Image (cartoon, rainbow, N blue to C red; front, side, top):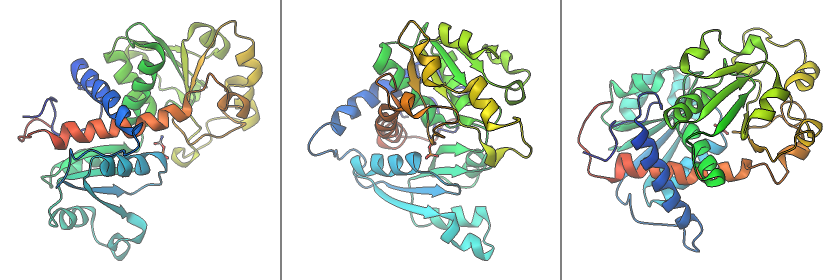
Length: 313
Ligand code: CP
């Protein structure tokens, strides 16, 4: 069996601390590969991976494809909008027909929470969740933690603020679960309408006062307002949101410390984050993107590159 507890990566919930540490440690070794003139190793030669994206993506899709190519896997991209789904073919038939072509791994993004778990019920390939609705985005959680380790050299005891639309954010959920597993302190901040009522049961703090939270935090991970997942309007106006919860230059300059600025992207400049802040030296947003390739190489290596036996999902 491979070195990780689970055969698939469906979320960070239930992933042991040592597995998260292994994935981050391996990602740092792959980061070195990315700094070489020839950014390629033969680790996944002979493996075939399909990227099954049912939802838009820039960073996750490209970084998974790059990670696969850097590991010498054969990689195929599937786009729902130009597939036979448009002719009425079912999700199950689509997946099983793709797997019939001898696929080892499927990386899937889907708008429905739980879709990657559903996929594991009828394919033998290793399944990696690239974001499922409002549920989880495990590789984003891992790359965010890797970026924090790169900046602070630790996760245990770090004070992390997660700001914005927590209710609709799979990034928030994977960050909360991963950071709590690794011993960080987490405070959620945002409008009361966008923070689930019982979220403190996950062991996080909740505050609606951004300036207090920023004084407390070592780093802030800023989420965008996910209008595409909101059936109704949860905030009165963008102007009010920016005024109460925007990471503006004035807010950051008022702090008597360096605050690390994170954002998973895509950013709405001028709404949840000012352009000056996004482009400042304290922002590690593009490091997060680079670390995304390394963490996805690590996940692919551990799930597909080591000798695997069928185990727990
Ligand atoms: N962070 C993230 O998931 O970005 P994409 O939607 O561009 O993949």
